[in-house]
Image 1 (cartoon, rainbow, N blue to C red):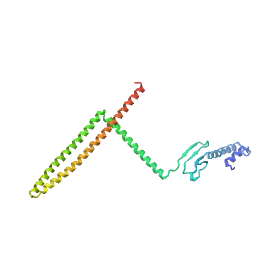
Image 2 (cartoon, rainbow, N blue to C red):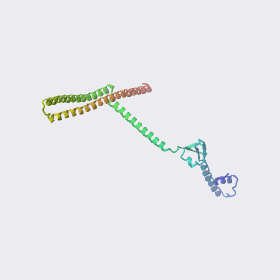
Image 3 (spheres, one colour):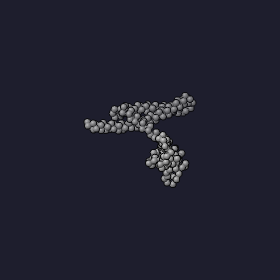
Image 4 (cartoon, one colour):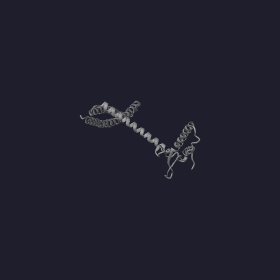
Length: 241
């Protein structure tokens, strides 16, 4: 069994080899040196590691074999208590998955933040459920007016087209040449019908979106008001009111 320098020095002192230390100054210097060396020795010996090999076997030692450095392992103190834990180095796939999860968590946090902002705006903007219903109906009326306007324009253009088609039929029946201006008017009215049809469909889509949006607001408003009421009642009970 090999001994370190500090171990030999300790044994030397313990065996009563003090005849070399005749003067008090020399004894003090030698004792101080011994304490330093012993402290270094004990400190070095106190550092231990625990790791598991590829077969699942647990190992202990003052050094970790190089191939296990990247694996999960623990650093122990002199009492065998874990003082530092090292996770295994992540694989490329694990790093990709970790980034994906962080991205999803960030997205979820952003959604939750926007939800809280909408709730705050909802409560700050509307006092009662009736206020929301009136706001919804007002917007639906405005969009409804746009739909009616588009329907009126389409109807007028279709009537004009029908009239011009009759004119063309009559002109051709009398063996006359149909004026180019008449064809141009037909093209213009046909284009007007296409444009207004698109406008009308967009307004109808918007109308449906408003209905869904405000109906959702109304339901959420009810929930928020119920939560506020429950909170007030709980605080009142806690205060004994």
